[in-house]
Image (tube, rainbow, N blue to C red):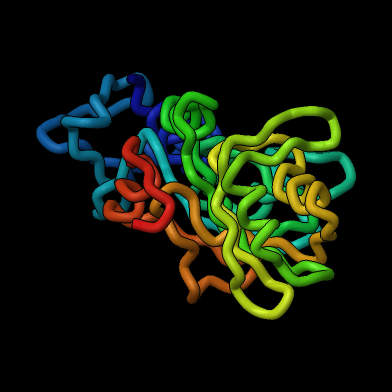
Length: 240
C-alpha cells in the first residue's frame, strides 16, 4: 500500500494532499527506511510507521458499543433524523462503521457498530439464532399464559410464527424477553399478540455481550477483547 493512501485511508489523518504535506515535511518516519516519499510502499501489518515520533496504530476493523438513545435511527445516514453513526468518535469516522442490526427509533440500549461485514453477517443470519435480550415496559402485567405463549412460539398478526422465546416478569408491568430472530418491530408485535402495548423498550444484551451499565444514553466506546468474544460467540446462550 502506498504510504499516502495508508495515512489517509488507513489512519484517517486527512486527505491525500494533507498527508503528502506531512510526509514531505519530515513528520512521518518508517523504521529502517530512508528517502520516504508519498508513493513509498508500506506494509501496515509489518512496518512501523511513526507520526511526529509516535507509532501509528493501524486496524482493519473496529468494534464499538453504543448506548443508543431514543430519537436516532439505526442507519449510516438519514436525510432528516440523527443516526447512530453520528455518535462515532472522530478517530473512527474514516472506517465507515455501520450498526449490526436495527433498533427502532424509540428503542434504546445496546447497539454495536463495526466495519467487519463477515462478523455482522454471522450475527444477523437467521441460521445463527443469536439471542437478543430486551427489557420492556408494558401497559399491563405479564401473566403465566403470556409466558407459555412466548415459549411455544407466538403467531403475529401477519401469520408469521416466531421461534420459541423466553419471557419473564422483571418488575411491575416490566418484562425481560429473549428472542432468537429479528423481524421488523418483533418485540412490540409479540406483546401486541398477547394484548399488551410496549411503552418503552431497551436492549440490554446481544449474544453474551451485555450493555455497559456505565454508558449513559448516547455514550460510546470500543469493545474489549473479552466483550468481542462474548458478542461473536457462535455457541450463543441467552443467560450464560
